[in-house]
Length: 241
Image (cartoon, rainbow, N blue to C red; front, side):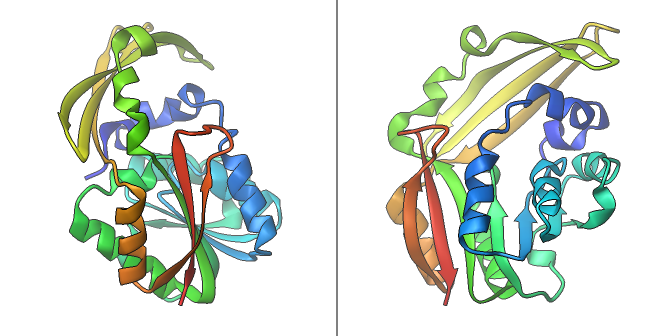
């Protein structure tokens, strides 16, 4: 099941306003240029920000998202007709031969169960042409990002266009490494509604990620640091064998 922050219609509708800084996508767009990728598969496309950015740069894009609430937002955006949107996950893909598959932001870590992770990599492998690439990021467990997931560190008010202010914060719920569960709380000033969304991420170290990729038919080409979060995240670039 998708987390409420992505599935609930009211939360999906404000996601872009809450996450307005998407400078993290610059590195992915540069990789698409670097690889001269024409057909791109965006797994866990969310509200479609990166899929539409790719389409703006002349690429043929398929966006795949399990949360219908987020996908509805993506499909309603200007220019959405240039992207093929699919409701599902990497295990439900139709036949294709993409040059590049991407999983931006928390997508890779949100696939927490090992069986689901392996199935995701198998599905992506099948959707790539021979020699095609997969790129995704994951937080480096050594940085211990969860130590900053407190109300004090995250509390903020965000003005939503035509929707008033939303108060939000995150709190750690459970730390059972490699799994970390946290809860976002959202308070809508317009009517006082309070919504929460629980998420669980799996913190994989570099060796675990590389072993999973190799087992599913990928060759790890490079592991980079995330330019927008130096020292905090690892960006994996793998080629389909």
